[in-house]
Length: 304
Image (cartoon, rainbow, N blue to C red):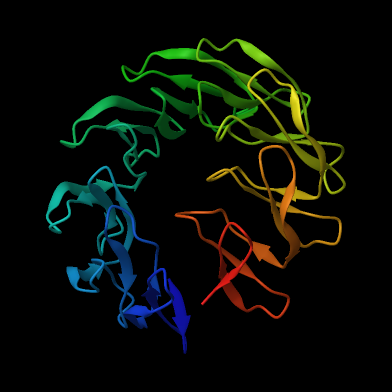
């Protein structure tokens, strides 16, 4: 995705413009479709040929996940369309999330949340103040009262991990990050057992066998990586760090510049970029100190 004269379009891997920059806004492709905004501030979808396959008629929209996209009608209510643009779940919900693992979180007019299936049937009643999508068979739930403690339910709606954590990530590679009452982070397994002690200032979800953690106070802490046993694999020496993708992770040094390390912690792309993103299909987007965007390969070479 690229921007030219205030409009958005798309380039291919060679840098050739394949979809002209004519959209007010555009988002990365998801399931072969990209959501785009036209001059009337309405959302629709285009395919990878640039053809508009779903008209720009929605007040708001999310990208496609699991074959369905969340859309908002003129009354501010949410429902779901399929890839033909057909409204398959009516716009009756006050709020909603995209589908994950066959279920989507929805909020009713009483601002309570539950989950629907792809037929639109409410399969887990709206009884929670907040929910988050399912990951590895478990969904995060909490109530916005008191300490707002987090827990997890299964797909029948049964609480399988009690609401006792002050914050929590999603399950990834069998583990989820959790924050205790002392504002320290560790990891639980799917039984709710704390398998990596809460001793980190912050922690991300596991990705490619490693999780980013922070030690030290906020604002002055440093980031590194642990494995699934909690062992430090890459020392906490980076001012900022991303999850691993395609074997590399973006890291920020003390000067505030970004580069990339491999899983041994070796800096393989020097820290010289103002911003950086994760690798996808062997390419990452970076920005220099002048705000100019570039695409680089895994050797750090700028692609035309």
